[in-house]
Length: 538
Image 1 (cartoon, rainbow, N blue to C red):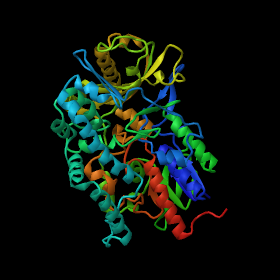
Image 2 (cartoon, one colour):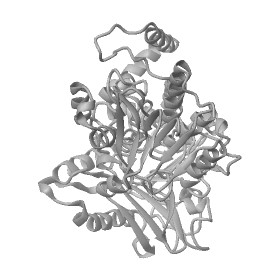
Image 3 (tube, rainbow, N blue to C red):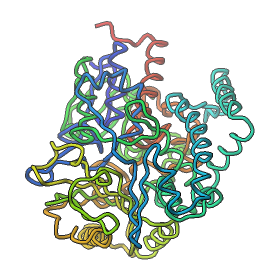
Image 4 (cartoon, one colour):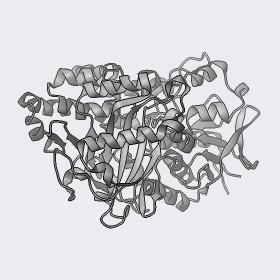
């Protein structure tokens, strides 16, 4: 009998499994799909063309986890983008973003903004330093949900967080409050005057978020996307050779080296509860697998509304999960290309540094706001926001010689279409719109498309368990962050049911391919096993 069953072999589930096994526990991972990795997988979508199917870029993966799991030894290799971002503009101008080069680029549009850039980046770095430290810590669980006073340990944890905040100084604390409670657009408007720099920075505030850049809370989303690093370089974005599946396959190899039993094509249909505690699971094939503890890497609605008897949960907790908000307005496409795009702003189909960047089509904050308003009214944006990556410029293993693959991460679309319309009917026309939008910036692009893979919000939900297509397993809003993620009183990766834990992106620190939720959940489970002497002696 395993000590722990991990439901869902996405990256957080694999990270949790690896740490649990390293602590001497017997671990079984049950994954519904035929391959582990969750949304971080690489698959062939057209003969000879492979790409990262859903998650598509690297930055937030925590360096401690890379070291602890020895992912490089298990085959992971990450290369940096030659540019962080490339913003083509309708008037033929462009903006390139890269360490050490951004200021000169911004000066083409505004000397005022170029002068302000260093101060802005310095303030942001001070704040992200705090977030990096908090990412691998369990949030203070000050509310017990049972009418009891907070434990001394929880109070101590809160005091430690307070000390981190004080280390920012008064000015830094004001900056942090501003970013947590205001919109990305409002913050950027007070710093800068030119549309291009506000657009490229503001894009981070709405990535995976179904909201206008002027919606309260997008300031935090902007911050959330700034605390990553690649190969020891902070604020840099990169590509995993072999695609995002290379990350999770390296994690799976780390798990196997630690003795973890990974079973694919093994969906869980029920979490077993005996005498008030989690006692194992039942698979969709009817197999009962007993365990001393269960940890779910699934979206909380899947965990608590489909795998459990509702009577096993407290009424208020169940109601909070029912009202837990998801939906990221995301539409994903993978394209096989006969050639690289030639942009009006930078013509030419020969590989250049901008082809290896995150190519953002969204020239202003006003454009992004209109995109959101359109989606709210009609179901999708007439002029959508698109980030295009062409990873084959960095990784020739993904496509045949002379050909390329592109990832299109598109917004905004409504997670659920108005008037009861189905995404199964809208998928193709919306995909055509996305390609036409790129065509308007890169004439000839449409003709270069050999094949496409299309994932609407409904497809993302059906294929990867991303409810309403939410790439973060729930909105990164103030009521669903830190000690309130996913529900106040259960931010410490434990649930109201003894022996049942959470390790997915619905827990702190939230979404993105970070591995941090899995790392943190494993630490709490190991503490519980050791305190109760549950560690396997076999």
